[in-house]
Image 1 (cartoon, rainbow, N blue to C red):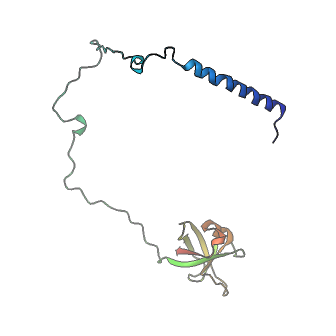
Image 2 (cartoon, helix red, strand yellow):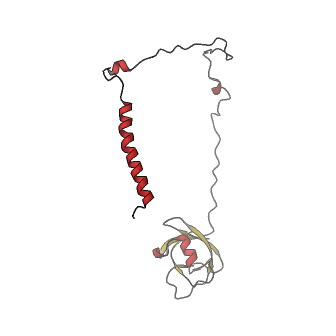
Image 3 (spheres, rainbow, N blue to C red):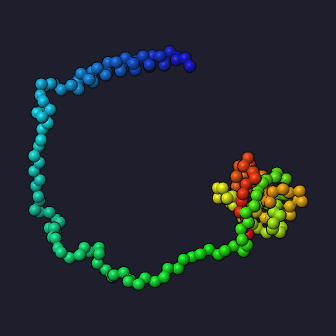
Length: 172
């Protein structure tokens, strides 16, 4: 890309300013008296700290008592049994099946499943990445090769179509 005239002028002006500024900064940043040693150049100041006796704060008092944040009731020596919430198990055991897709599946949320009857709501989870979809089972054609066939749009929520067939877990 060629520079326009105004860009060339800006570039030249910035270059000249840089060539002038860098030596000037170096020259003026040098110490005036180069004969002094580093020990002489370092100065130490004694700072006196004055204590105000008219302060509004009470004086510090150190006691041998326990700190105030540790006072209070002592914890129960025999704690009770904790209740752990365990989710309810699904009606049927999960099935591990091979899933594929087809564009002519009737309904976007319909999945053609040969293992389970038609008309049920099932959750399909991709075992590789954990993504899930919910679909309604339909009656598959007899020529279906995969265990479960999803609509193309539904399958893309589980995985990339180039990864088909994928291993899924089906729960009711």
